[in-house]
Length: 265
Image (cartoon, rainbow, N blue to C red; front, side):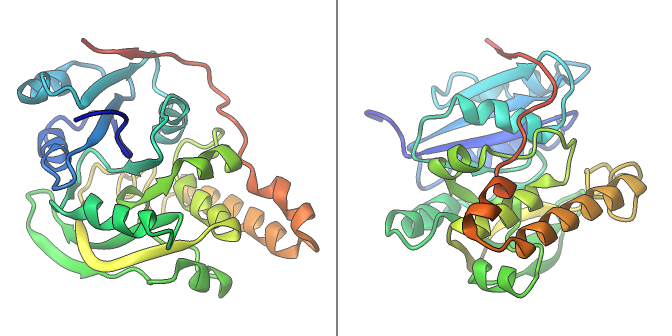
């Protein structure tokens, strides 16, 4: 590889060493191989995740980072994004899998200037990797956002222009989880969101995930409070009388927790 790659993929990790190798292998095995992969650990209590990635430690595309304290995936991603200079930033969860041509197809749309955030359809799999169904996201995310839909793309299956994070200040740094949806709602006001219908991502639905765990999953009090706050903010944006009045409502608050990211060698 010569020069700066187009893409950096960020994988936040916390106590998910069982699935992390498959996730990392699916990224480093992409048909678009000229990329950088950053696995950022959210201060897991042990080093089994490092051991699990031993087969890929000599790959120069892979960087391992560890947070000095547990801060949640959104603050973690904000900190990593600050150090990224590639034109595009992609995401993947540590328990999920990308199909081999995922990034090649998404980058093709971005490089043609057709969108600023590109998602895709996805297959739902269970804890053992067995298929549970297919979900197709709307082709035109801006259109469904205009009609009030909150989920316009599956966040960990997206690739985004770097400049979008600069203008919107990334993810809400005061939220422990859930504001990846808020990020997309803010993006939709200023940028083009498109989804490829093809299922290029495998989303693992299992009991310990953030969206399923009793403390943070859908139906939990914490998740309900997060959704209420997100809805209130979006309502304020819709009530803004001018773009100038709306713009401050599109910029996320910075991380409210101080921490360091240290490279694991």
